[in-house]
Image 1 (tube, rainbow, N blue to C red):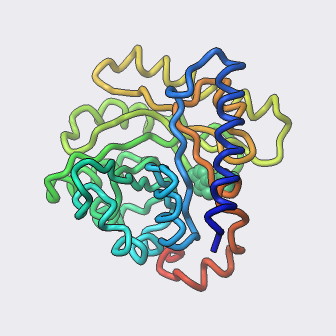
Image 2: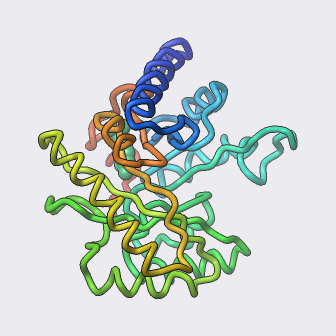
Image 3: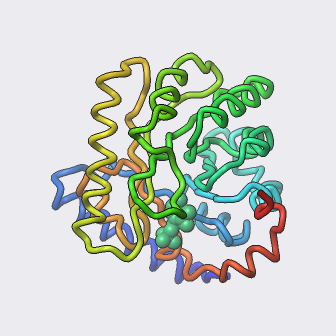
Length: 260
Ligand SMILES: *Cc1c(COP(=O)(O)O)cnc(C)c1O
């Protein structure tokens, strides 16, 4: 587990890089939300990060987070926190199969990886049953990589999703999310982030009933570029918490998360 002092030092370093990127881009620090990506780290790490003031967390798997959620309950929206405390918000940022939609709607405060119409309908039904209005981001695939999740912005399904979302009363669309391609030149990373912003501007003009204010883009390796290109939320894992365990160890620990 990461030491509090190390975590504090990492956070300070990231904060300083966020400030620099904001200054270069002529933006205010308050325009960029820092999400701590806590996937693969134990609940105790989330508690440590919350003690340092972090309030937004990203998790990528349902079963894994189900195991941590009890320990975090006092810090969450309906927890036993003093009224003066700001609750932490936990977002799902990993791909969600529609058969896990009900569980996810129950466990998470927001779903940032909405990537199909079918999933939107399932989440809407599940949220309605829970008397919840669930914030969502549409995950957009802007890279050719097969492994990347998200909806093709030029597809008829994307068009249908944008048309349908305003009528799904138990979902609250807040914006878009993307993951930039790995190991490519900086110019390509930048082009990906710029493209997300352009899709947002185009879609916001065409769908005035949709709220698309949030642009969730940028991770440990590329967040400064994302801020320069208009990110309103960056998602930081390794730069904050250190290296994650290898995928095989994760698979062994949470087999249900890997069942298709
Ligand atoms: C893991 C993950 C991150 C964080 O990645 P780091 O490179 O560790 O900062 C951000 N977004 C998504 C969708 C992720 O799955």
